Length: 121
Image (cartoon, rainbow, N blue to C red):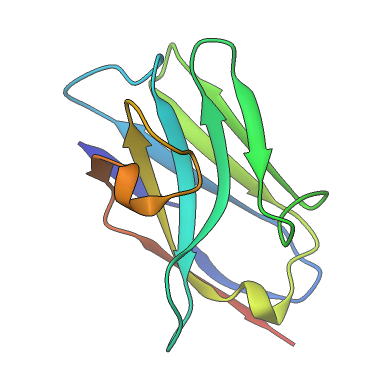
């Protein structure tokens, strides 16, 4: 029900926009988030957008460089990533939750399949 796309291989300093298309139900009232998992590391929170009001939250590593947004008409969420760094290399997952903490992955009910972002130095 969630399909992530937009990953790829880029150089440090470049930008990418990830998309997460939802199907089957609307997530406009939900918590929608992006998480990432680098090789050998645990999955970590990146950003979230919450409810109809669209409040946004970011991990310290993403704040100021990444922007999360949502198009409710298209039932799609985005993650605009600027000034990418090699340490941003990871598989990025989108997820949706209807309750719980926006930064706690175990509170999310739906997950996309992940899209790989590789940033070369």
